[in-house]
Length: 488
Ligand code: PNW
Image (cartoon, rainbow, N blue to C red; front, top):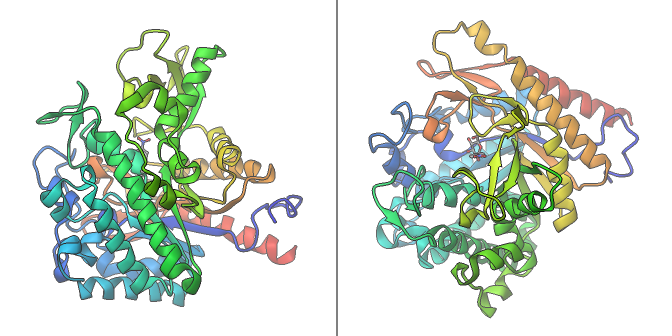
């Protein structure tokens, strides 16, 4: 369909999903309300020194109580889809070792019904970093194969209660970021570090990120297997996974650097997608990690087969990549063995890959959107959704509200990335939706509330929401796209 319509002014088909994205811990607040259990992020943010501004998600933007207002805001902007995550500990406060929390089920029922009532398609993430603390306490969460049983139980609970209304399920958000930050650099819970990197209270084995990832992959497979065998035929939904997908550009034309750019992708994104889609870890990982790489049993492989209906792509930025096998590298992002000896750097000959932002990992390089989508099409040839794309700015409590709302750079960022996406779609990539991160300013993990990603500004004293220029721009963009479809 995308190809047939490529002569239109807009290549997006009329059923293309335009939305905004969020996550439970960053949005909901209500961290102890109505029977919710503690999760890993509740415990982590309450430890001193973990979050830059000393804040936490106890209240966040109080989406739990203000979801109706937020759904109306979405309706105003004109999106036809909303990506959000469910809080595992709100639904199962003690994982599979306790009861289902009825109040949690009720909350998501209300949210789903409010969305559907306004014609907004729910796009549901099962796990966006937050998991019941109980699982960490009992058996070390992702380091134990037991988590597969828990994740299967949790996803089955969600399919059972919500599957009649949810047509798009995502098992995990960015497990590549979660395992690297949780088990290598230690900046996310459970704050475990490997090798000499990071600044944790204890040093752990180099293998931990690999073990955690292996359990994520098998948990994903268990949930998909359950969905396929028990729910999919009657409920008619699709199930996917979301990866953080940066574009890695070789820093030079040398073969060594080109291979390093390939390796960077294999050790970051294909690490999860290859096993799930192709049934094995990338060849480069086998070569470099050898026996350290966990092995899939024949039983695992059976479950992994055909384990995905679509790929969710969180794309924000690009990096140059430099080889660290044949030449020496200073330590840095990507340079270690478990990241494939492929240093990621924003500089080439003293020139940045794109305009820098308030985040040290976010450079504005819209061409990366076209390249990553094209790369994914060639490697996996599957339907895709851009599940996150957005622009972060430092919040400035002293600036006027007028200034806060005039987010020209965010508008330009989104507009240029959408242009690059159009190019990829015209060339034949099967992209079916696009979600801006995020509807509102929110709790930006270790950066707390110092960074704003919202199309709408949030006043943290009153929790009042106000659309920014970028929200008005997105509203107009969606409207024009719909009109061009209606007239076509
Ligand atoms: C994503 N990187 O995280 C998450 O899915 C969101 O929850 C988050 O708020 C959003 O992007 C903005 O940060 C990322 O290092 C974490 O490249 C790390 C990276 C990218 C995205």
